[in-house]
Length: 164
Image (cartoon, rainbow, N blue to C red; front, side, top):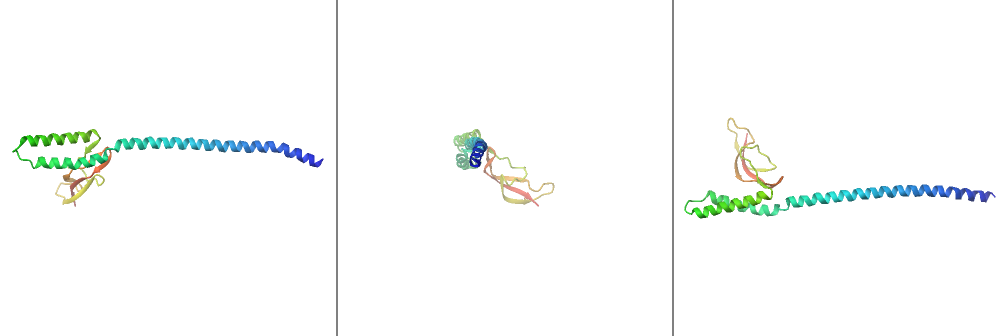
């Protein structure tokens, strides 16, 4: 009978061990499910954030190609002569139309003259010695306008800066 008793002991221990193993497996699967749900939620949020950025900054390429046209029109206006007022007015209207179109897409012109030099938004083309009463690092003159698309620099402003 010792063999029979050991068989009974193994059978009585087996269901308990099996239940413990199943409980552990269930717990492991629940953790995996929770991890998978968290990963799915994170992926969804990343996708939404990426989509929002693509919409917000999608016009950067077009804006970058239009900005040189604006520069050319502004130069045409500074070099205009009063011989043909109609052409001058047409250039002004075209320039204003382009600027308004860019503005409606979130493109803004950097204001630099008189500001402190910011290397993240400006490019120093030249430096001028500080005169008495001036601060070092101030923008004296803007040679080419800088543009932002929301909070990103499309083109840095080219400026002349004071230095010691």
